[in-house]
Length: 195
Image 1 (cartoon, rainbow, N blue to C red):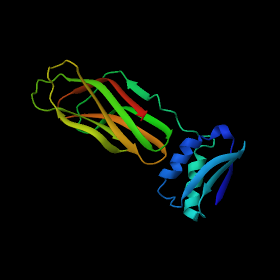
Image 2: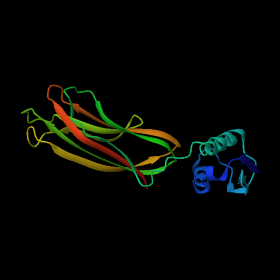
Image 3: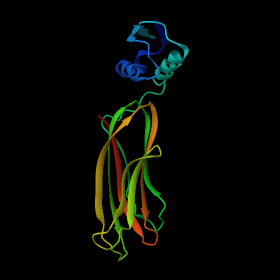
Image 4: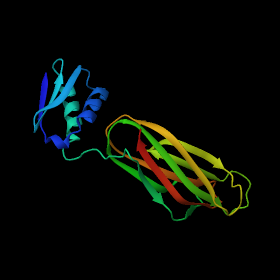
């Protein structure tokens, strides 16, 4: 079976499209190949006929290439919030957010760093920090105690995430207090890079 689309060749990354088709769980018919027969005719080949839901899934994959190409984050993309902010709440306050635009499925390296302090004399754990991706926690440290009062301490980390679907994603760095102590944060950075 051949599925034909009218696309300008420069709008489609054939390598990425091929990988997306192979990785799409709702397409179970054996995929053969993709090519351009003419400059504006993209053809996708399968060993047999696609079901209606498979055609819809294929259409969705190809549509990503039409006027909304992937954001290229192969060299990394980042956000920084340098200003000092603080909280006394035990709820999660957002410090900064990295928005990943239209990106393909795959593995991504997420790095973060920030400076934090407390001006409280408590020796108990008073600060919590976490990283959320699309509302799901991907890193968390729930109870830090300041090593020095009113002096900034650096925190940094790295994790690998597997993004299973094509689309836009938000990564948020959040922080909280034990409730009565003041927690300060500054120089927050989030970096994302495809691997």
